[in-house]
Image 1 (cartoon, rainbow, N blue to C red):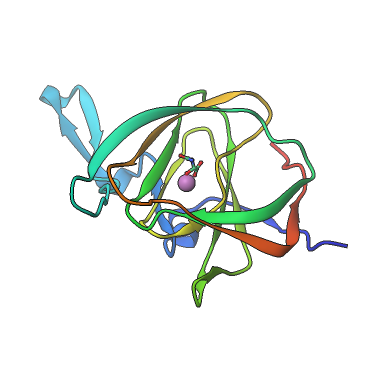
Image 2 (image 1 turned 120 degrees about the vertical axis):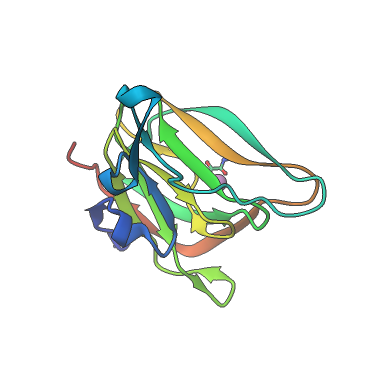
Length: 166
Ligand SMILES: NC(=O)N[C@@H](O)C(=O)O
Ligand code: NI
């Protein structure tokens, strides 16, 4: 029996070892435009490295994953951060791992609300996009430029995620 991973709610504190949660945090809010707009300021700062690197904005259209889902691999981007912000107002799953001597440790899985996104800090182990329940669009801010920005690691034994309760 493969190890079943618990799914926990996404919070800024729990996710802080891996990056930032993108959400309308009242502590970041400042009123602008004559008080007609709330600006939730500087939720994260994209981090790109290497000569010729640039920050780019993309849309990822993710197909929903089938459950139970096997986490067989993790990846990381040594040259840039990567953020995912839902455009389809749907929840999604976030799987991240601590680094253990250059390999991902046991994955931690979070359920992001439809009004939450995440930014993976540069070189943080994560699983590729995990859309849930329906085709879902995400605004993705990450890096373009020369050099290899993808490192993958395949586990000897996968981990199981059960269908999340939405
Ligand atoms: N390949 C790609 O751009 N996507 C992954 O990095 C991902 O985290 O989904
Ligand atoms: Ni990625």
